[in-house]
Structures are given as structure tokens and as C-alpha cells.
Amino acid sequence: MKRIILTGGGTAGHVTPNIALLPTLRELNYDIHYIGSYNGIERKLIEEMDIPYYGIDSGKLRRYFDPKNFTDPFKVLHGYKQARKLIKHLKPDVIFSKGGFVTVPVVISAHRKHIPVIIHESDMTPGLANKLCIPSADKVCCNFPETMKHLPENKAVLTGSPIRQELLSGNKLNALNFCGFTANKPVLMIIGGSQGSAVVNDAMRGILPELLKTFQVIHLCGKGKLDSSLDHLEGYIQFEYVKKELADLFALTDVCVSRAGANAICEILALRKPNLLIPLSANASRGDQILNADSFENQGFSEVLTEDQLAPTILISRIMKLYNNRADYIAAMETSEQSDAISKIISLIEDLSR
Ligand SMILES: CC(=O)N[C@H]1[C@@H](OP(=O)(O)OP(=O)(O)OC[C@H]2O[C@@H](n3ccc(=O)[nH]c3=O)[C@H](O)[C@@H]2O)O[C@H](CO)[C@@H](O)[C@@H]1O
Image (cartoon, rainbow, N blue to C red; front, side):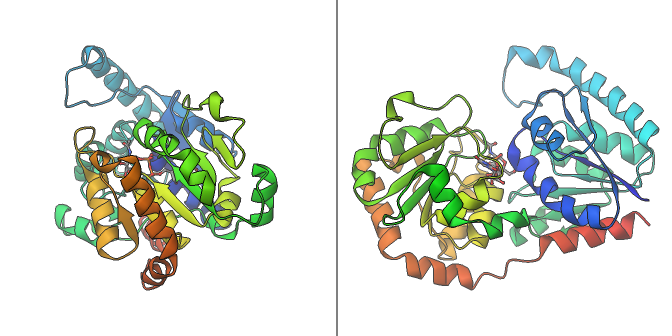
């Protein structure tokens, strides 16, 4: 039996693609283990899947000043020692890393032990953690064709992003019951990224009375971001984060308003949901969501509004445009040649773990 260690964490976007690989890895009889941080979102998401989970220390590598910059180097060092010990003990045949700071010590220690490493980058340009990992990786998978030019030629492979297959077979009726909604009114789902987005939440809650005239609204608002004053509103339901119910909620959804995280938008595309994207601004990130959103807009899949365009009248009119022209967006999305990411990645894993 071959043994694989999966790693990735920090936000759900660094975990859900690993989860998407699990059914095929299980079919192929891999002995699967996971290394993540002690308390990151990955711990909860992975332990539920009955996979042995090992927590290690993880410091964040920040490019800005923060008092934690003085303590985190010690955590990083400790995390490296823990990763080295785990790799020595588990002796995996291959490592697959989805990125995030916690993966850096895992990838570097595996490489030093001559264990093959595959890493995956979901965004247009490699994030800092993956940049540090590229020299230790045998293969670097990416989601967008535009990313290939940022990667070493002998390592880069365009695979696309693995999507949890269960998302494609949700049940509308289950979602109607779960939300207490009627079948006679369209449904708009708001997805603020895996951690939720205060900017998107505020903008959308600001136009709720207007929205509810046309739509029923499902709001995935992020941990700690529920607004109890809205609980009584008919046709509005909010969740901090949904897991297995997401497939059903997607099945019920007519249009989405979403952040432009790489995984969320690939799922929205695979499900052909007309969507308005509100990318995370370049002040708060390296601007990758803006590139993601631009690419989707140019292909006719999405409407895009930047954070400084979120005035209520603009927001409402773009959502109505999206809804009224939904057939056009769906037709554009039908032309997308989304690749079969899961089988491409699995064959890399099979090749390298021989
Ligand atoms: C703030 C931040 O740094 N965001 C980054 C992070 O986003 P983030 O972690 O939000 O990642 P994505 O939008 O790519 O993925 C979110 C994942 O969580 C799932 N989900 C979400 C809500 C929910 O209730 N249930 C649920 O299962 C989605 O289906 C998706 O699979 O990683 C992405 C991929 O590297 C980047 O593009 C984003 O810029």
C-alpha cells in the first residue's frame, strides 16, 4: 500500500482541493495522512473525513509589521522540527501540498529526505508560501494557463483545480427544506470566501430589503459574522460556514454574488451559476482575486464590481442585469473547457510515487 501525506491550510481554499482528491485516493487504496496546523480550519475539515491528522506549529510569514513577527520565527523553526520528525516516522511515498504557510516545513523536510513532492497553486501568481516551496517541489500544478510563465518550465503542469465531485449532485428539495424557502421565488447565494467578508456582508445586507423583493437570499457570511437582527427576515438565511449542505444550496441557487477566491469561482463555473464577483482589494492582498475576476469577466462568465463600486444602486442594478441576462452567462460558461483536474493530479501522484 502506498502512503501519501496531504498538506495545506490556513483558509478553506487550501483544504477543499485536498478533500476533492480523497475519493480517488481511497479507491486506489492509498494510506492517507494529513499534516496541518494545530487549530486552523483544516483540522476540523479533515478530521471529519476520518483521516489521521497531525498538527504542527505554523507561523505566518508576513510582509508587514506585526508584533507576532518576533515570535513566529520560533514557531516556524519548531514546525520544521515537527515536520521532519513526522516525515521520518511516516515514511510517505509522496507528498501533495495545496499551499498555505503550514506546508513550507513539510515540503522542505520531505525534499531533504528525497520524497517526491507535488505542490498546487490555485491563483494566477504563486503565493509566498508556494514560492518558498517551489525549489523543493518535483512538480508544480496550477489552475490558470497564465500561471505557467511564473513557474520553472520543467516543473509546471496545468491541471486546473480539483473540485469536490459531490458539489455537482446537490438536491434542490433538500435545500428548500433546509432553508425553509418556497420553490416559487428565485434564490441568490452570497459567498464571502471561506472566512466571510465584512465588506461583502455589509454591502449585501445594505440592499437586503430591495433584494428580497425579487429573491430569497442564502448568505454564507463567515465565522463570527452572523447578524442576529436579520434572523426574523422572511426569505433570508445566514450561515457562518456550511459543509455537506453546500451541494444542495448550490443546486437551489439561481445566481451568486461571491468573492473571487480561486476555488469558489471554479466551483461556480463548474456549476454554471451566473455570478457577480467582488474581488478582495489589492490593499488587503497581493491582488490575485482581481486577476481571477478579470479573467472570468473577459470570458463572459461573470459580472465584476470592485470594492469601491459597491454603492447600493450600482449593486442592485448589476445583480438585476445578471439575473435578467442569466442565459447569456450560462451559455458562456458552457463553452469553458474546464479540465479534469482530479485525474490529472492523481496521475502525477501515481507517477511520482512509483
Ligand atoms: C482572504 C484570502 O486570502 N483569500 C484567498 C483564499 O480564499 P478562500 O479560502 O476563501 O478560498 P476559495 O474561495 O478559493 O475557496 C473557498 C472554499 O471554501 C468552500 N466553502 C466556502 C464557504 C462555505 O460556507 N463552505 C465551503 O465549503 C468553497 O466551496 C471553496 O471550496 O484562498 C484562495 C485560493 O488560494 C485565494 O484565491 C483567495 O484570495
